[in-house]
Length: 297
Image (cartoon, rainbow, N blue to C red; front, side):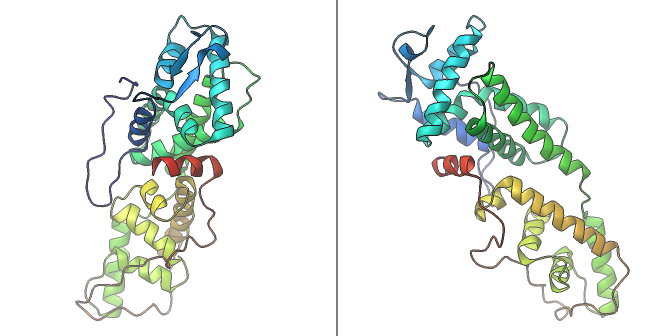
């Protein structure tokens, strides 16, 4: 059934790659509104709606119609959001599914101004929307518009952060690695050796080095790394930004008198990895996002 997302491209399958967040949401929402007992709202509780049970995709299409009065939109959204706050789970996914066309438009707009992975932008936009669902005032008009703006602001903050954050590029990695190889007399060192040295020097933690290696050297989306480590995508992005600031300062600083020892020539450096089960002191996904993540997982 159409939900405004039928043409949304699915992320191709592959190593370290998962479905795009909005594509996953689309599929979950489709399951909720399908079958003989779809997730539905009793239209009789909202003045102006047909007095019958309405599946949420039908409700969404009706609310998006230009002929729908603003008062009816606000009243219907208020009922859906109250159910989400009270029951969570399917109703939270249902609320996000009703907003899919708006979320898709927000991500498309932000995607034209950033080189961030689409999965990271979508995860941040969806997180911003879910946080707004938990906090938006229902006694003020234009609820759906305010939810959309909350989602947009969350995605925009991520793109601004990404633009302003200094990043160690591959040339800097290779330059430092080559200099260390000459100094130590060992064979060629790679970017992962630079990260391993930064861990040994106390500049990065093992978790931070793994995050940088996975998302910069292997092109794994931050949202995918965050899911593997039970961390919110927004928090993982900020963790990477802080770690890369320290790494850039470390790489640009004059060489220290002594460096961490390199492995014998020809032996690949060990890949930095986080301790088992550790997100360290990093907090888990926020309450609204955690509630839906369990449904979308």
